[in-house]
Length: 244
Image (cartoon, rainbow, N blue to C red):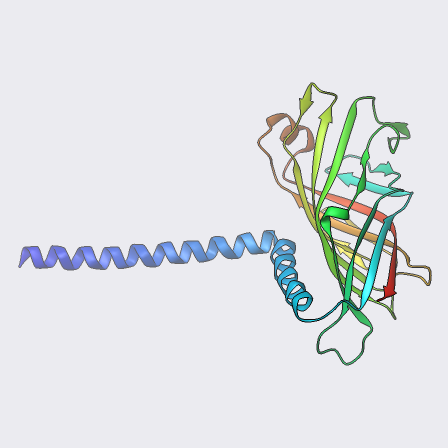
């Protein structure tokens, strides 16, 4: 009987342990998704757009250009003045499936064509002065996709990129991963917020996005930037949609 009781108790304890484990895993998943809501949405939206791409031809060729007079800010530091002129990318657009009108176009850019100028002494100023020589921050986009309303000019683009900080050949930090929605509307975080501007008739717009930057495996950068922290980007851009 004692053996039976021990076996029964063990079974109950194992069941409770599994239940607790499942509950903790579920809680962790919810926290992770909440913290990285942009990522969860982006990959879901990416799958949706890839599905549309496989089942229907493109309706538009899309061109994306970055312009001057942009700003980037991180942590408690004043914003960088950033000239992003020369950035570009190309992609395709498709009418939103099942929509009552063809105003909304789903766009997906080929990340292999995406280029955004690095932050250097030639492109960036901090407190009115150029960045120090040899200091460089490379921006390597990984995806850019979302929706454009051709009538209202509203733009929402999910953006993911790695920022590589280096000082000449003597120091290169692990990349900072930035994920956000670049929007023509309002973007608001805990400590940072900003408003964009919708596309005009020439396709010009101002996109803004707030993102959480997580710590990396570099104590110096974590301490210097106060990671985790928020960053914000103000990006002047021009978007062109040409019917195929």
